[in-house]
Image (cartoon, rainbow, N blue to C red; front, top):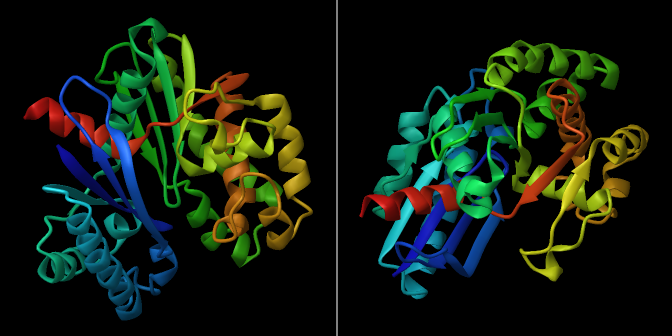
Length: 303
């Protein structure tokens, strides 16, 4: 069957259309995305502004039409951190659903971590043993650990690259100050997540980690999803120092960076470095599947 997954994130709206069936991998058929930057459309009271809602509704309508044009019979729609944290989340969801006929819902942070873990487990399989999964989004950091398809422990922290850039760096915090704040918050979770033992395989997913890995020498996306890509702690440490003195335009010129996310790569790198250090991870393997694939897999499993 042809299905769509509409992911409304803190940075980007992304419709992924796949050909999917139970027992097989979802095969990407089409992608339609737009940099919405919803997190930057939150006012002082943490409400999504009228402009932000209008941009979201416009994109959601276009994405719904795109899905219909490409032959989708189902569109699974969800929103993550930016809408989840907004005080007018219900109004935002209602506006989108009334304009599109979708059933857009807010995905809790713990479910985000759980479904991303499911996608990683299906990609790497049972031979990976106990998995540790790390995911830096625009608004939050998701962590999950376990030896089964359901993780033993999940956590979601407000340490997204966009959030930290907006709330800390752009308000005058120094990089050393940000580093200490991030390490303090992640450090509170290291014990509970490692209580059952270390990781047989440590994995990272999603755009921030993919970009950091590419900046550190990983293969480009043009080489396909089956090429092994890793992010090493040693190379990441050097990249953090390099990013500290670069402008967003200079960052955007690096391999793997994009213009719309370049301004938040410093914060993303600080979070990634802290997570790897505090969990004792020398190397993270990059998984091409993440939250959208996890949502699809769970839906297919329940059919």
